[in-house]
Image (cartoon, rainbow over all chains, first blue to last red):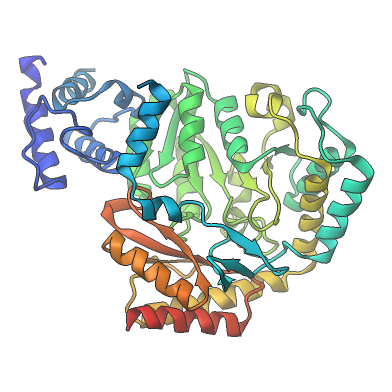
Length: 81
Length: 389
């Protein structure tokens, strides 16, 4: 992950903590398989990210994203457009 | 382990034997739209989406029998090949008349109608903006289309507008999709407000009226009719599998000639068409819907009674009175116990557990019918009271 996506990564980890307070998540963790977010919780996370960063996140991009770092990089890319 | 063995093993690990046994419970029909036999006991069917109770209506059955006898069991072909019989044309003509619309297409299922319309309208240049709670067939149609897919918060018009504002440059490629009545909690879309926003941004709007067709509106055309905004909706998609008591899907448009788009709809082009008996049933159902408006009245009478009684018991019901009355429970185990409790009292409802139900919660989802009597509804209320006690 680019170092420039640190803000996005930290924000996403904070949101993950709000959605799944019992999980100690790391940015390298797989969002669904390791952290254990359900598909519906992932969509909830996307809503929080869209609001926080004032972006539109295409659901199509989720297919290629597994980890928090990958999600942070995708968010950063959208913010930079 | 090959792919298939691994997938089976994953599912075996993910679901308990009890969950497996509850998936696809068998209902034995008993010659009534609202009575059946489930797990060895006679039950009131309160989870079948048979809103108008037409499954044993004599006109529908006679139409089906005559078509079966005269035209055989199936068409053996797609609509674009040999699968268009005069029956299909008659059904589409009946739909046009029912909706007062110049254009109507019949599909083999409601699911395929959504796949066909969405993927037919949108390609990689398209932009889809879906209500978050849209049905799986809408999400699958969106994925199939290759369009860029966004969602807005369920029934949140302000969020829809925020997102449309960001998409202004692509307005000519945007299709917004909402539903008339949402299938899980029975709530309706704020369609008049949605139409205002959609009109102001100049984007197209599709409404899936699967659960509202036959249920809402002065003549049963759905939420768009109920809200007086039919002329602002670009395309309505619906199904014959609920109020029309058979199977099949359709799209109608008062604004556009969809017949010119049908060759773009692969689910229309490459699926075997509906058999004549089903097409005849759907056509007859449209006639009965128009001729027997008292069915809609009785449906809403039943909805008001059950919704009010369950709310008064302190159960967490949906946000508005609806023929879908869903009770939210916090834990799946408790929901399974409650579902068995209702069945023991002779009432079958749908059990919805995570991940199908959101937020780790579970639903006991009841769908009422015009064919339920006051006595049936009393029995439902008593059954719910017994699980609350």
